[in-house]
Image (cartoon, rainbow, N blue to C red):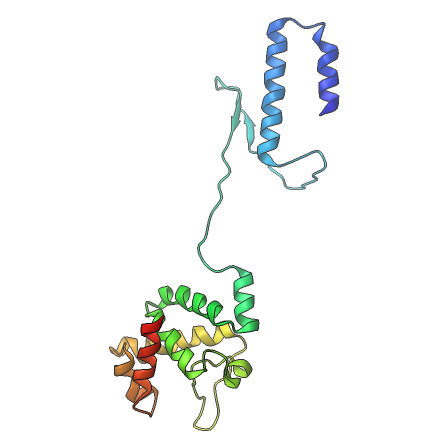
Length: 195
């Protein structure tokens, strides 16, 4: 940049006013454009494509194409990592809320079942097996999942196919199948009403 300024100063005495104005305008455009692209001389991008194009057919020779940034809603990778490692109830709640939209299932129902069955997501079964929902694999063994995310996703699929699609979408309607005890529906409903 300093080299350009020095060269312009040397040319200053030899150029007419119109030429000087054009050079100053081009330099100003290049300085502004480099500020917007975030590229400096120190940057060495192999596949960098500038967003400035020279268009000789237009009145304005330099066309600055806008950069398009796509924003995707959802949890960040750091949030998912926290969910899988710490089993933080708030991280679990955020993941359940997001996943519920995919399955069209009431997130409060899924969250409440998990909170009740796992002692607010802190039971040894939840910590050891990523099984927050008290689900058994057989009559004597518990289901086990590699990550908390996998356990939650599986619960959504399970509830959707076994209950929701069959018209059983409340704790009261699910109780006789999901749990042998008759008070389960009241405890799950109470948690749903508190979140």
